[in-house]
Every structure is written in structure tokens, then in C-alpha cells.
Amino acid sequence: MHLLKVLIKKISGEAKIPDYAHKGDAGMDLYSCEDCEIMPGEIKGIKTGIAMEIPFGFVGLVWDKSGLSAKNSVHRLAGVIDSGYRGEIIVVLANLGKQKFDVRKHNKIAQMLIQKIESPELEEAEELSCTSRGKGGFGSTGGR
Image (cartoon, rainbow, N blue to C red; front, side, top):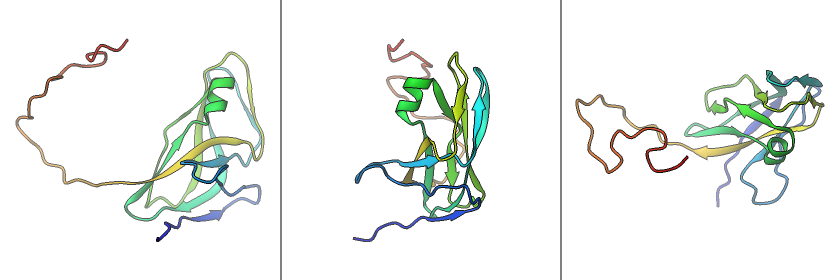
């Protein structure tokens, strides 16, 4: 079995290389390389101090750490790292809570999944096929 290899470069001496907490985990943990605070309602880009070489045909998707979100109301925004990007991985966090949130160096701030992608050919069309949902917008399937 051939394992996919993702090259990771420290671009800050304060960086911690991402890792998987448990064998078989889908997401690798991303760590802050700086101390800062995020005030309620504030959005801030948190440096990881790393750059990655994600192979062509794959993407890095940045997701919340569930405990961080549930316990601290901190949510990540953005989160698509394309294979051609070689700059620093910065995790954009929003504090949706009522308390200041302290980020400390080497704290887990998000997780990244590496996933295979398809790049379909895009073609403009005059009409699209009909479906049972049709043009129904948000909530059209009965959800609240």
C-alpha cells in the first residue's frame, strides 16, 4: 500500500509540526505558534508557523476542533488549502462566545483533513435537469 506523503516545513522556530492524536484519525491537529487573545465577536488569523506541500489532486481542509468549539464558542472560518499554495498556514478563528479566548503557543487550534479532489470540466448551459427539490432554497427539505 502506497502512503500519501505531505511535506511540512517549519517557517517559525515556534512552530509545532501537525500530528494525529490517534491512529486512524481523519484530521491532523494544527497548533498555534503564537500567544494572543480573541475578544468576543472578534475574528483573528492565528499563525501556525508551518507551510505544507500538499500533493496535486489533493486539498487540505481546515475544520474546527470540536472541544474548542463546544467549550469555548470558537469557530474556524475559511479553510481550503490548495495543493499549489506554499505559504504559511493561518487558521482564521472567530470568537462567538461572551468571554475572551486565550490562544497559547502550541495549543491545538484546528484540524486539517487531506482529501482527494476532482477537478471537473466546467461548461455553461442554458438549462439544467429537473429534480424533486427544484429551485428550493434554504429549508426547502423541511429542516428548520
